[in-house]
Structure formats: structure tokens, C-alpha cells
Length: 525
Image 1 (cartoon, rainbow, N blue to C red):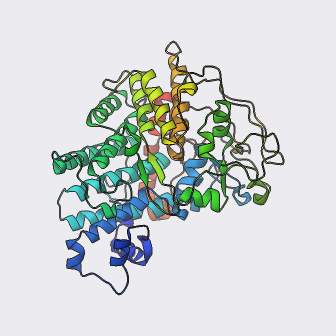
Image 2 (image 1 turned 135 degrees about the vertical axis):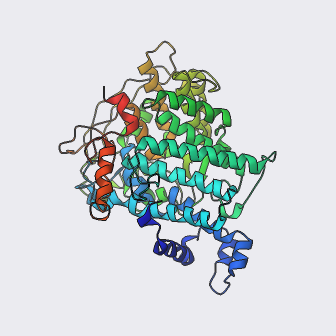
Image 3 (image 1 turned 45 degrees about the vertical axis):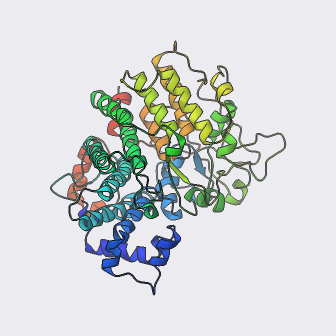
């Protein structure tokens, strides 16, 4: 894999990290076994799967990063802000950030330098300990690695995942997608063979913070990741996208909310960044759409501001890129996330899968399980049920409500703005293909909350939802959201030859404007 990330010192540091508290979110029995003074022998560790389980937990913590620092650096500052769910209200972020497309090098480097080595090294250890066995642990690790690499390639573009002879060489995003889908297929087949006729098989529950050891749910998640990827590459490679999408749905994706991919990690990353630290508040974009739609999920997503002015709306967002004069002024007048420290982190849902199948049907893929209208409405209903927002019938029949004009909080930061979209909610089979796509993606974007990176992916991939301009200058950039983040600056000295090749694979400048492989076919015309 990535040689400089997985040498012996990295593996040793990972083991040391775990011994020093990296597994504090696991069950009480696991913590007791890990307690100093109660050390287990190597034979005992192998006997109860403790060693492999430790690395599986490490992979989960890395690819579903909820630990406060990892969450802020890998998710909040990037996807949550660029997907227009949240924006910063910390005045220390004003001059350099991803929204204004001039983030500090440390921010840009973080996913590559911090997240990558954790799950890559853990995967290698699982391979080593398994001694070549392709069992449930190996399949589980393959799925987790695919989740990790997918989010990284969708941030940077080309990425080193070990496909080349030189372990530090970058692969194209197209090659990465095809490799990850092959890995997901392999994992699915292993799990199918291991499960046999036992769909209720539970394995290593104490190490599974997502599904509690339910093997069938991990298999559904693998198929769901495959469908997510197939839809993402729909415009870049329509033939393969159709093949992969039809295969994924036929194999069985997540269709019910009790199958949603969510992780137990206390404290939740979003609670830290938005509620406890107060660095992040609702973004004006999602607030204006949901306010205009009279969407009952809005109060499930965000809290009323502490200092709400009389007569003002219940939830108030802040413009992306607003120049915050003082955090202490901004925090009480804009809405925080409506989460608790023990709320589960949400990473993939049945609602998203319904919208993916709806788009597949729109693209004339077979076997999606319904018409575009039926699947669109199913996505909305699943999301309403997921959030306890009541019946979606009235909402789905609304053919007049549109995005609201944005009015800033009194005494707040950033400018008011007229709406940028006139799309409505009710499905219209007689609309143009572009109108259908916008309507579908706007509702998918709302339902994807709080997974900001997926929201950012949809904005980049389709151009929807239409969003407000950044409230500050973005220098020479004339785009509203970045198409990517630059490669890690450390590669200039640590891996210069491969970095040069990576830029060739990128097909453009190593900046915020160069498009992802899966964007170009739709947006380069």
C-alpha cells in the first residue's frame, strides 16, 4: 500500500495508540481486557479475536471519523462547509479556509497525513494476522478500506492506493473507483459464502460500533457503497455506471432505516464542533431551502438560536464565507446542530439509496424497484421517518413552495440574498430532464444531512442544489464551491516524482478549480 504510511514504525505507533486509550468507545468487557494490570497473552488475544478486533475498531474510527479533532479536520471544515450544511462562525477562520479556497496547508494535508495511515496500517495488520485467509474479518476490512479511500479520492482526485508497482504512486480516480468496486464485490461474495443460509449471523459484535456484528448489514452496506459510486460516475462512464448500479440493487442495498450505516462514538464529532465548541452553525443555503419548503425536518436538524429576535424565523443560518467579526457575537444568533453528545453519527441511509435508485430509473437503469416518482417519494418518506418528522404526504403534494429569500440575523454577519432556485417539491413527470434532476437532487441533498461530504459531492457532480455565492472574495476563483482540495503540500519534498505524475493524472492545475473525473463529462461542455 502507501509505503511511507505503513512501515514498521507506523504499525508500532498504532498499537501504542490503541494501548493508550484509542479504544475507549468500546464495550466495558473490551476495556477491562485492555486495562493495565490485566494484560492478555498473545495466545489469549488470538483466541478471542482481540488483536484483529482492535484493528477493525481502528479502521472504523478512521473511516467514520467522529473523534473531535479528526471530525473537525476531515469532515466539518471540508464537507460540512462545502456541502453547505454548516459554515464557520469562528472569526479565526476568516482569512484562510476551504470555503474561500485558500485553506492553510495543515488543513489541506490532514486527511492524507492523519486519516490515511490509520486505516491503511490497520488493514495491513488484519491481512498479516489472517495469514492469507479471506474470512469475515478480511471482508469487513475490505469494506472499511473502500469507505476510507472513496472519501479521500473524492477530496483530492488521484490518490495512492497501492495499485502501481511503486507503492507511493498515485492512481487515477477512474482506476480507483473500479478497484474499490471490485473490492466491494469480493467482500460481498466472501460474506455471502460465510453466511450461508444464516441471514441473522452475528460475528464479533463487541468490535462492531456500526452494526453490532450483523454480517448481513455489512453486506448491504457494501452494495450500497457500490450504488453510491455507480451514481457518482453516471455521467463519466454511463455504461459501467449502469452495470454497477444494476448489480448493486440486485444484490440488495439498504432499504430500511434500521439498516442505516450509523456509528456509536461518544462524544459525537458534530456535537463537539457545533454545540460544544461553537465553531460551526447552520449554513444559509440549507436553511433557506428548508424554510421555504416549510420542511418539518429543519427543527430536527438545527436548534433555535439562543438570542432569537422577536418575530424572526425559528432557525437562522449564516452565509458561507461570511466575514465573522466576533465569534462570541455570532454563536448565540445562528443555529447550532440539534444533536447530543451520544447521538449516532450518520454515514449512509435508506433515504439516500432510494434517491440513488430514483436517479438510476431516471437514467433508464433496470431493476431499480419503481418509477422515478415512486422512488423519489420513497426517499422523502424514509427521511421523514428517519428524523421523526411525521407524515410526508402534505410535503410531497406541495407544488408551490420554493427556496426562501435569505435574511440575515439582526446584528449578524454576511449579506441578505434572493433565492437562487425556483424548484418546487411535488414530482412532475412532464418536467424537463434537467428539472427532474434538480428536484431529485435538492431533496436528496436535504436528506443526506448531516453527511456534508456527500452533499458536496452532489453539488459538484450535478450543479444542484443551486447555492449562494461565497460572501467573501475567493480571489481568482469564479466557482461557488471548490471542485477538490489540493494535494498534500508534504508530497513536494517526500514524494516529488509521483506528485508530478499525479498532477498529470489530475488533468489540470493542482488547485481548487480542477474537476473530479466524475464531474467533467457533465460540466466541461
